[in-house]
Length: 365
Ligand SMILES: Cc1cc2nc3c(=O)[nH]c(=O)nc-3n(C[C@H](O)[C@H](O)[C@H](O)COP(=O)(O)OP(=O)(O)OC[C@H]3O[C@@H](n4cnc5c(N)ncnc54)[C@H](O)[C@@H]3O)c2cc1C
Image: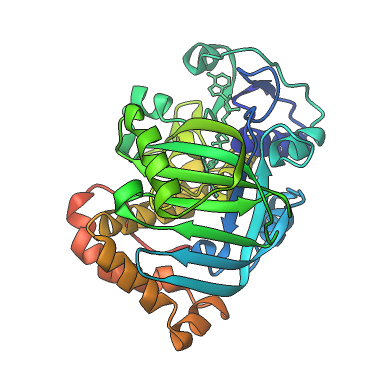
């Protein structure tokens, strides 16, 4: 069987590894000259959003034989609003490196591949669909979903980031909410190690020309004065698709609508979705059905996004205050209580109208 994979990000690599485990050696096309974005960043695998899973790394290993080392477990998150700084502690997830270093998840996964990636090749999934039995689109954007008329909604953002130098706790992240500089996005600081961290400002629905001004406002208002080693800007795509397979074309990762539009998290879903694409192809299974839980989860997070968009700074402050009150905090962060699953039905009633065609059925099992 001939399989082409477009994109050697987490989704494409997880798909390739699953296919190889089943004796199928795909052709993997990557438009860059190596795996990973040239500028490193730290991403968070947030356990809160994947409940009832307790540990995403164990789950990926057990279910898909996907194994990689995180930078650190995440044990502390400090949330900054206009009026409060609130800290939560617990087994909150993991910090993972992205980029081109040996620790980056895409580099770790690519080392396990037997197939050689075809670099410097900007592939055209439509042309490949005529040549191969299956094409897996893992391009990290919505272009294919848009061409194929299955893009339901998209919530894109500009991200301005910096690699900063200073003193950091390696198991701790900070998140900043303030509509004056982030709109309904946020900023976050996550460490690579004790001396180096990634600082990101993620602003949805903004023209690129405004990002610098908002970044300067963020640095000033939060009084951030780390030494900056490198600056970068990235366009982030999130959004939902109504279908994930059309004939012999399978969409996965961000291309399949798995990156959530609330906080823009999609690494776990890209890995799981990519592996499921490989499994569906190798075993002749129904990819739509296999990935329905990932799609439903992304749909639920879109409702949280809609709800969040209606809040102003005082509402956000009250919300963060409420979820960090001592008793509530203990239940949310020190148990495996599925807070997203509990809040979702209330929000769904109010915000469903905005996405009438989405699947909102049963939560992830
Ligand atoms: C700034 C930022 C911060 C983020 N933080 C988090 C976080 O903290 N936690 C989290 O869970 N998620 C986070 N995400 C989301 C996460 O990065 C994505 O969900 C994840 O990378 C999706 O993986 P993917 O394989 O679908 O796409 P990508 O990682 O984007 O990989 C796509 C690959 O395809 C290649 N490609 C594209 N088009 C072609 C083509 N035509 N031919 C050949 N190759 C092609 C690209 O070069 C790239 O290598 C963040 C995203 C951004 C941008």
